[in-house]
Image (tube, rainbow over the protein chains, first blue to last red):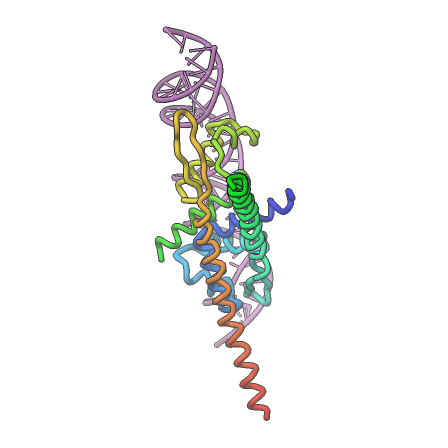
Length: 112
Length: 112
DNA sequence: CGAATACTGTGCCATGCGACTAAGTGTTGC
DNA sequence: GCAACACTTAGTCGCATGGCACAGTATTCG
């Protein structure tokens, strides 16, 4: 659970930056080289590389180097941890809603 | 779109901290006072208040003060922006998948 | 071979975050 | 009234983040 939390930390931190979200969006269209990606941002290459590294170390993308070109690929599955977290929240809310409904039902029964 | 991006920034930043995610989870069970929430964390009250303020300023919770007690309530709707972003990503992926499938189909047709 | 390309590594700096302590404000209970 | 309570404000501190410039390495092309 602590590991799970740490994973969430990393993924949410990675997603909290607009540049990194942009990269994810961009990679949704298909694999792209670091250079091609960086060209779209008003940022030096070393700065941009940090974002790429953040995304990779948090499992959101995967990169491979062939020759002098590093190519980035989106890891779609990774976003499932966000999905799971959202689903867990909804489960908690629904439990509460159920309890409230039972409470209302019980009160109605008591009134009868 | 820039506004939309700024909203996402705030929400993801807010969710990137385990304390704040804990608060959201906790509030899923129902409204709670700042004091009651803070008591569950190994943290001073001023430090904890900052997290509450971050959550509120990013629209994830709502707070009201009655007397000397401030009560926090979860704003479930706010997490929809995360849902929407995830949905947008999937839409992009599926477009790409569709294109790839068409490509494969076309190739098969050409072979016949 | 040598120049251009595509990163990669290093070091620096400004800013902001998250924690703390200490002191202040407004409410409530005896 | 006044003490306890529940925040709230103010100020400090260490450290992580995100940007930069500059130099280095490995590949590719003519």
